[in-house]
Image (cartoon, rainbow, N blue to C red; front, side, top):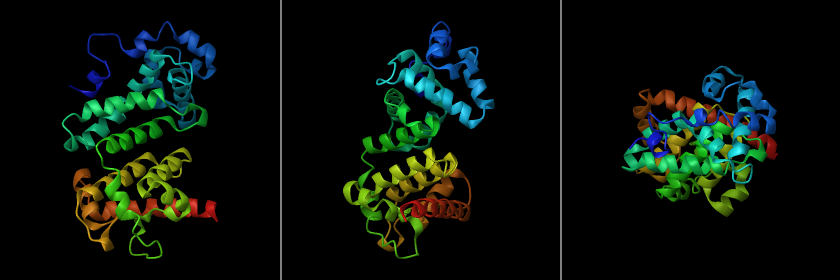
Length: 263
């Protein structure tokens, strides 16, 4: 059963956008930014051509409408969830070998993330929701602890591996909640601050997952370990050198940005 089917988006039945036509004027009255789109059925097309800031404002409006601590309108939540299906499908495809029911897991976490969206924090909706979906699916499957245990052993004074991810900037979080939780917090913050593009965040998440799937020695533990880099390179049909170069550039950007803020 596909992810779309899991969300109740079946062929032959009205889409969430089609069902929202009558409610749209009411939603526009609550959030004037929605007036940028005349017809909710044209929403996906409009988003593809809109500026990033304007697009996110529309998604935030839908997020408030659909969140349980907002208008609590499940019709609006369905519209937002459908807009995020392509990204959620990519997550399910990336992780499909980990569980035969991956579409079901991703669909469930997508719905939860949409309904609990932190709209009041003015987040970057698409990137943050999809990153949370990926994180929560992995946590559900029990992949949250081994990588954290290994990364927490890394000595950040050693330049042999930059994969400690500027965690010295979040030292108290690491001590309280573990390295991988700090990693996700840091990447979520990076998405919201637009420090990294979503493509590079996804790369770092893939490396984190790959590091759990291989056996490494302590000296090679972390995101840029050779086994993890090779695994991600094979999955993305690119070279290990390209993956490592992108990862180290992203890590340097994270370290530079958040180290300056913590100074």
